Image (tube, rainbow, N blue to C red; front, side):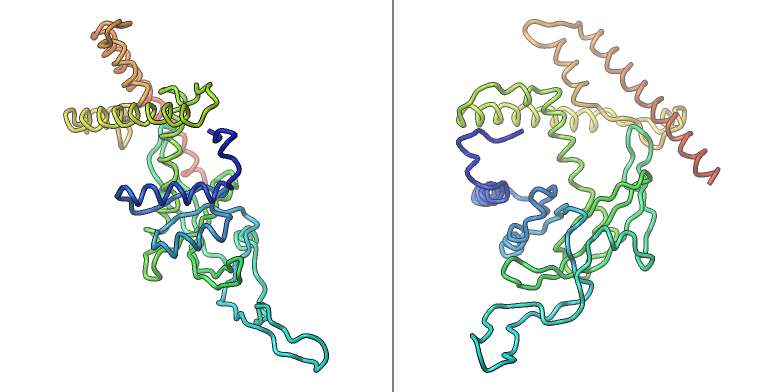
Length: 302
């Protein structure tokens, strides 16, 4: 969702930093900030997060330039007596930066096959490459970051820079590089199921009110999902019958369907709502099982 016209004078990274400051001022705890390449490509944005001791997993474009060794930066020596003496910082070392997509094509890049998570389409598996890199800020300050490249089976590349400590294990870096999916999934549910995409006003205050109501509805749905999961444990025997490792959980659409039976003007009876949700869960489990069988067939064939 775009911001209202009267707030578009600031860049997206600047607005992002404003939101982060507001979140920190209100004491909201968080461990990791994950963002797409609209924010991640800003070197100043990432450097500011580092200065504020915020760990991030920032997606970056595939043409982002990185160094494989720490570059030496300084003011060049004066070579001639005539003219003005150099005063600006420059990269003094001879090694050249590399675009991250070039590293993905390099035969020296080591890949590892990792199962990311279970999905409705089966187990999501991709190739990952992890290596330390060095980048330069806009003022030519050298920063060490982790680069995680994900290569899907269709060839799509996703490049993520992280400022995790040097001793962070590779599995943790890979897991953090994929964390943004859950945020995007929440946004999609808010737009498609909870009315966030139906905003039609023009004032910023109206946008804030609409977003606050959407956030409250999202929180309510998350609470219902959590209580449902705690109250109704998924039967492992049922998972074996459907030939899936994990049975599908209650979705946002399912919660919305259940609400249709208990609102002041009900559209479904409680029995109809339960049957509708059960049918959806069974269909999702069958769909996942079918895709898992196809996935195993292709793996065995290769």
